[in-house]
Image (cartoon, rainbow, N blue to C red; front, side, top):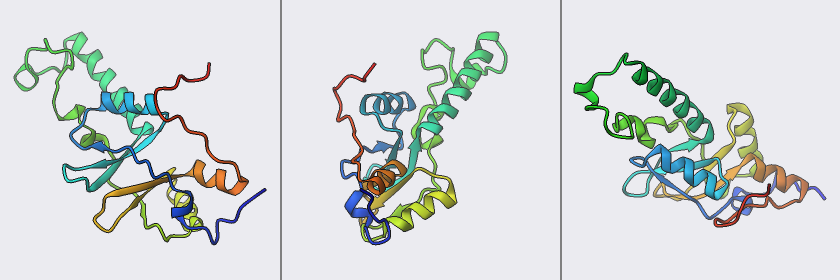
Amino acid sequence: MSHSIGTTTVEAIMVTVVLTVNERGKMEDVAKLFDERDINAAPVVDNHGVCVGVISSRDLVRYESVRSGIEHELARGSGYDQSHYGDGSQPNWPGCFFEEVGFHMSTNLETAETTFPVSRAARTMCQKHMHHIIVLDSAKHPIGIISSLDILGHIVGEPVSRRTGGETKPK
C-alpha cells in the first residue's frame, strides 16, 4: 500500500531520536557513532545545543581521504612542520582543529519545521542533491531528522528498520 506525501507532514515520519554531534567533537568518534548506530548523518550542535551544521558519511569519506594523504606525506618526511604540529610522537598526528567535526561539517544544511509537507522535503532533497533534512524547534535545537529513506518508506508503506545500538550487524 502506498501513502501520499502531499498531505503528510514531516512530523509524521521524522525520526525523533536525534543523535547529535558537538562541533568540537572528533571525527573518529563520529565514525564510531555512525557504525554503532547504523546512521549516516547527524546534526552538529554547539555547546548550547543549537544546530550549526550537519555531518554525513560523505564528509567522513573526504576526511579519511585527506587524513590518509597527510599521513602518507608525513611518513615520507615531506610537508611536515614540527613547529606547527609538534614532534609527531602523538598518535593523532597533528591533533589540531583538522580532527574536529566543525572543520568538516556542512553548514549549508536544509532544515524544516514539523508542519512542512513531506512533498516539500522530498522536492528540496531532489533539487539540492541531499539525503537528510534536520527538523528544528524555535530555538534551533534539533528535534527530528528526515531522510530520503524515511520518505521512500512512507510512500511504499514500509517502516524503515533501524538498529538502536548494541545489536550486531547481519552478516
